[in-house]
Length: 141
Figure 1 (cartoon, rainbow, N blue to C red):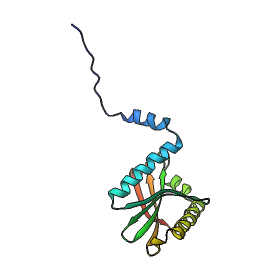
Figure 2 (cartoon, one colour; figure 1 turned 90 degrees about the vertical axis):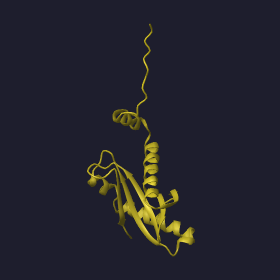
Figure 3 (cartoon, helix red, strand yellow; figure 1 turned 180 degrees about the vertical axis):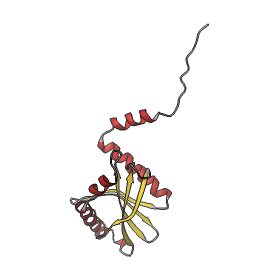
């Protein structure tokens, strides 16, 4: 009589998910975070217009549209951070870079000239907050 051991395929445990995430590069983690953010926005009625729009002055992670708003979205994934870390990551200098980049985008995409403009932040995996925490109108010019 032979005993066969069958391996039951189970979803990866939380620990193995953490190990997989730890082995990813910063860029890969960023892409995964932005993919989660895009899914969240799409599930909440936003149309994704563009991703990773770059200029010399900066980058905008996601550009989305909902109702009469064109929304420039900054995605921050901070699994080891808290609300204070989030605040320091989104300081005045970072905000000014996003605003400057958004102005360049609007100059080159005139079809949005009659849209209201908004700057949102999606914070991912920040301790003490929901897994995807949406800060609507997080800052302005």
